[in-house]
Image (cartoon, rainbow, N blue to C red; front, top):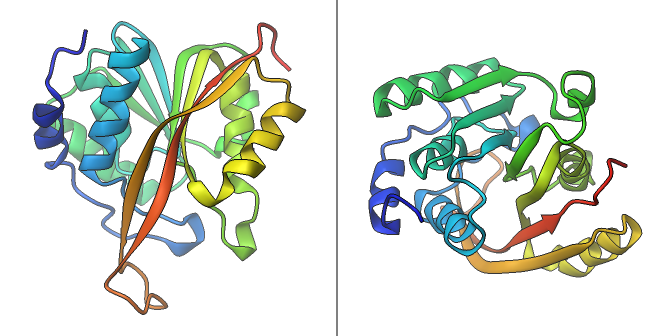
Length: 216
């Protein structure tokens, strides 16, 4: 059982500071506290995939999902992030919230196979880049890495508009099971100069992917 109520978790996560220097090439947007708390609470309460587990957070940014997983009882959490500025934010957030069973590793998510063997982590979390025209397919590349590294399940946020494409990829990869376990509204704030609106509301799905019994 989760040791915190969802509202308490969200209150803790509201203390997580955003990127100090967001970079458009990495599509950096902090997962909003209400989205992160709903996502993590659903993962723990419906599937018990956080408490007592070793958790990997891919593209961890300033640590929102990593910290939330630790607050819900994960034994140990590793966040993987390519941007050194974001890693500084991540480590500062850990210190300020006083969570000490979380580490952040600077690495390219797409090259993690050289660092960790298959099935190293109980649970993999991610809010991957959705994929711009210059970065098309990056969300599915992140997912493929997560599926190779997880022992049990991968949880990932994806735009609802991509649902049929994801179903097709799951069939291609012959995953034992893949389900949308929550439908959420993601509010993207005006972060970069090219943004014309103060915010944009995006429909997103929280997916749970069960991994094959053998590494691909």
